[in-house]
Image (cartoon, rainbow, N blue to C red):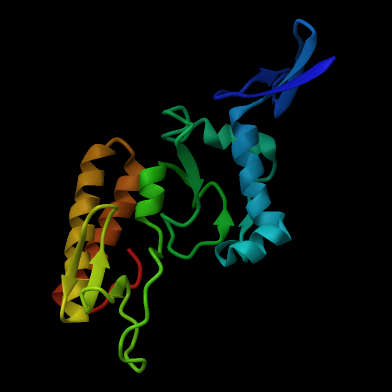
Amino acid sequence: MKQRYVRLRYDRELNNRWLKHWSEPGVGETITYRSLSAGRHGQMMERCTSTARKLANPGYAESRSSFESFQHFVCWSRGQYGYDLDNASWCLDKDILVIGNADYGPATCLFVPQELNKFFCTGGAQKLPYPDPAMSDIPFVGWSVSKQCFKVQCGKNNSSYFADPYEAHAWWQVQKIAMALQFRIKYSAHVRLVGALDERMERCLGDLRHGRLTPRF
């Protein structure tokens, strides 16, 4: 008999316990269903326990989980904003609320859409070395060989060029704050996310006013 696997966008409860997966007979096949939270929980635990994943992505090197069990994870998830909103494109994040946090837990995690997850990322496109090897790295500012000046990008199709790398970084700070304001309006019902956006905007604006660099939004 054939085996078929189906990923679901909802969770199923049986005898007061949430199921990770279950099987049902079909016509000439057995269908195994995997719940929404099983997929999310599995991805989280892989980041916390997989040596290969930690080596491939140093950002997960110290990752750990303080969720007591799968049951705990599901019960927490179902009370969070974004749990049931177009859940194919929403993901679990551990360090938007607390920068640099390594613990996946109820106090530090939230669900966010992919566009916000990318917005908060520390990195960006690979940067070409500056012409002067002794020059200190300016966050988010690279060098354009074709234009022979500094290039900075904020968002997918939003870039500019400058002769001064510090002016380039200041432009990035202004653009980042503007994008954050747009996201704040778009996701105004997501209270925990709005709080994180407000905190990051305030920090970035303070850096801009005092001529400081912002290494991470």
